[in-house]
Length: 168
Ligand code: FES
Image (cartoon, protein in one colour):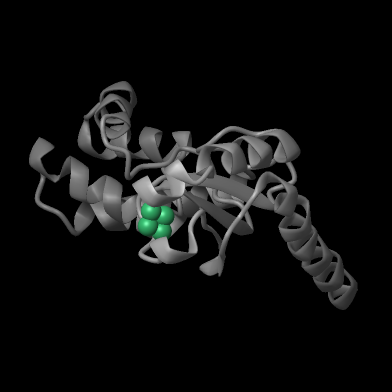
């Protein structure tokens, strides 16, 4: 994180902390708000939180890791969600996830080094009849198989190339 964005991040944390009553009871809502605003809980945010509340970064991290809702890596430009609900699981969702992990070179909860993709395992996405499903930025891919994974990834890699061209 650059010095500027780190300072901005600290300012955001300060604003959030000021909006909640002091005390440990506010820790979870503060962490939720940090994640809502910044997309994840960064080490810098935990340090700012420590300075402002006296709750150590280690303690806050320990509390946050207890809940699956919190993420600790910056989300990728494209969010891939692999359904781990029963219907998807029994129809091969785990193999689809394995293939995504293999192709992207990351595990669930991580972001690719180029910042393009982050990978999540989620509970039922509400379209079990289409299982197994994967959603990318909210777009649902039905009847997923490991073989379909490269095609889906290519779609988003092509978008990235296109927007890079437009930015030039
Ligand atoms: S179990 Fe995957 S969509 Fe319901």
